[in-house]
Structures are given as structure tokens and as C-alpha cells.
Amino acid sequence: EELKNDMMKEMEMLKTELASRPNLSNDEVEEEKKRLMAEIESLTKSFEDIQSELASNSKTYQECIDSYESEAAELKQTLSKKDRVIQRLELESNATVERASLLEWKVGNLTQELQEER
Image (tube, one colour):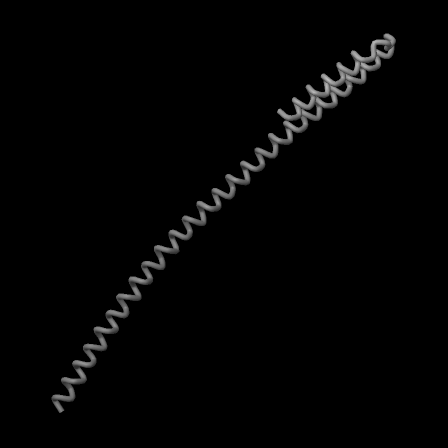
């Protein structure tokens, strides 16, 4: 949009400049028209190139964002699986500690019974 506005301003300035030079010959007017047309074509080409580059960059950025989002989702899923494994291991560890405590208690009781029998 800014480029378009700049082009319009340039065109207005050129029109004003041409209007201020009424003594131009027909050949000079034709040369100026050719020069202006070449400049307009060049600006149009530049504008089209910029639009194409913007579209390409936009597509590339979107693909990059999609890739990052996909990778983030995979990492989240991996973390979730690891969290479940950690929780299961904690439960198993707690159960093992409880069994060890129970066995210690039983050994203590058996030791006491054995001492009482002696």
C-alpha cells in the first residue's frame, strides 16, 4: 500500500513538472513519455517482485510455524508419557518401601519370638 502511494505521488510530481514545461517539443514529450512508461514498468515489476517475495516468505514462515507446533505437540506427548512412567515408578517405589517396612516388622517380631523362646 505504501509503495502504491509513493508511485501515485511520483506520478503527480511528474505531471506537475511536465505541466510547468510547456515549451517541450513533440520529440521531447515522446521521450519523456517513454521514460515515464519505462519507469512505471520498472516500478510495477518491482512491486510484483515484492508481492511474490512476501507471499513466498509468508508461506515459508507458516511452514516453519507448523513444523514448530508439530514438534511441540510431539514433545508434549513424550513428556506426558514420561510423566506417567515416573508416576508408575513412584507408586512401585512406595509399594516396595511399604513391603520392606512390613518385612522389617515381621523380622523384628520373629526375632523377638525367637529370643522369648530361648
